[in-house]
Length: 255
Length: 336
Image 1 (cartoon, rainbow over the protein chains, first blue to last red):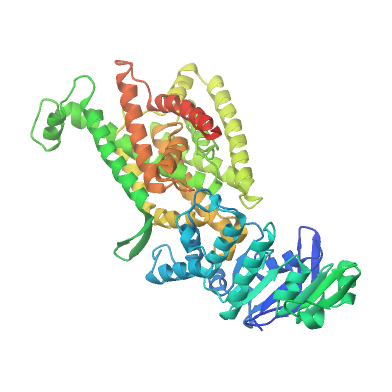
Image 2: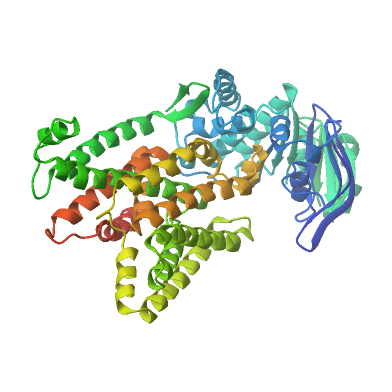
């Protein structure tokens, strides 16, 4: 297991979002977390990525309690992309992707040949190499999202958590991003994403986690997990589930 | 776009454009320095300036070596410190308005200096009190802003509020003091380089040299200051700790220079913004901001010395006179 949550509790101010949550995310797989709005999926992702301190319980990264690791060390092994990151004004693509190298650098050792290789490879993999000298704030939403993923790729973490990476993108760009993430999985990375679209989740995920009101309702391969009962249970929606004619993954059609 | 620079054990990332801009600014600064030493009554030809500096006696030795050169060099130091201080604080706050003369540091130094000047304290006490006042004001602003993790907007608002309160207190202290003391405080409050020189320069250069490792770190740490906190944390940094460190360095520089020469307004505000536009970065570049500041103060002091001669206008008045219209220009241009 790559990431494990044990008895995890988290929340904001005096509001608890979840308590006593247990979860295991498999190594080298594409895990997708789904659930209705405000079910706690983003909070879970932020807690797993130590962006939000856990109130109780532990997050284990490769079996080690994440709070015992220096934050730089975590950043070399675990990358995270928030839902809508702030785009700095006038920064070029290459410059922003280069900032992914931060955890591998020191102020007295600000750049190494390895950094150059990592940035070039990341931009090629994410398909943004031709945009290298363009300012990020002038790109389209889809291009911008691929730049952020390139930054995370340059970080070379082996594990990447993404909070709703396809929101605000049109269908073609959503597919582009999902294919990019699947490609990362194919190259051996562990990818964990929060997604809104249940059918996309079922089609792309190796491991699906369904949440409702701060609890994990079901977790496992989409073919085993996605049923009409689960859809009613999690989303309160009546549906039929049929095999997808393209990919054979479960396809949810609401009634 | 960027280049890698190696100095001994240091490996720095620099922007090519920043290097070119800085070199051009250095040349302009050299020209401005020559003008600052040459112009005035008596006029000293640049050739005679060089002769006097090289030690070949000229009739102008007193004018060049005692009067004009120390003042011009001090102007450079003042400008560099204000420029770098402004770049640091603006970079942290992601807001061009967050400069030491807007967020209360200058006003804290001013209040402390006014209290010292009007309570009959010895002259040697004034600069240290001003430094302490500036640092205290900054601590207040940071404490008010830190409650929300130094979120950019709150930090600036807290600073503006503190600045207004401190300015009001300064007025009260000045009005209730003996008129002659109030007048002295008033003169101190408008930053001037007249009658100052090597001693102040030494203090300022000392501060800058002592903070040099911090500034190398700051140039680096500012790279993540334009990212949101979650993204920055994901990259293994501690954004709040970084902001406090960067702001503290900026505050220290600003308080130190204000304590030495008074409030040379707008330099810390304008220089980083001009430098940012020249280098085209998302944050004010430190080196270019320092050089822009130096150029600005040298020219402001020169203009103040010449335009109303024999009356000397304090450099702080000239910079304020340039700064106001410049801000308006920025606002107008941004709308297009």
